[in-house]
Image: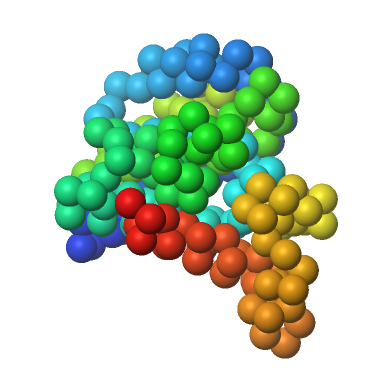
Length: 188
């Protein structure tokens, strides 16, 4: 899904891909990004640890705010987005939490750029590099995925019950993760 981030003069596209072979994570990212012929920032995530499209959208907003206010921990917008998506202050920990790993099969991709066209072209080039077509259903919450996300972000059953409205536990989990994303800026 493509969104315009008016306050930053940017566009963001968040998409998922199913049945991707990662292998060596660093080589995977380099190989896919090497084929990019447009000026965009790209970050890859293990989709099984992403609590919906909203999770990455708010990570991107917080990363852009951190860079704009000169409070960023990284020099790269893509890396800053990973820090926020993981709610971690250290790059290695961030990538350990939400980054792609050799066993990753479902990949979430975030593409940020200055124009709608460059972001769309960036996503097409990423898809070509992955040899896959977008499948945003990998961003949806499933029972097994919910357990992994709860564990990775330390979300307790009590917290979910407290946050949930009308028994919507899935939305409560998304809200809890997005809250952790937002709270990272208070720990800088």
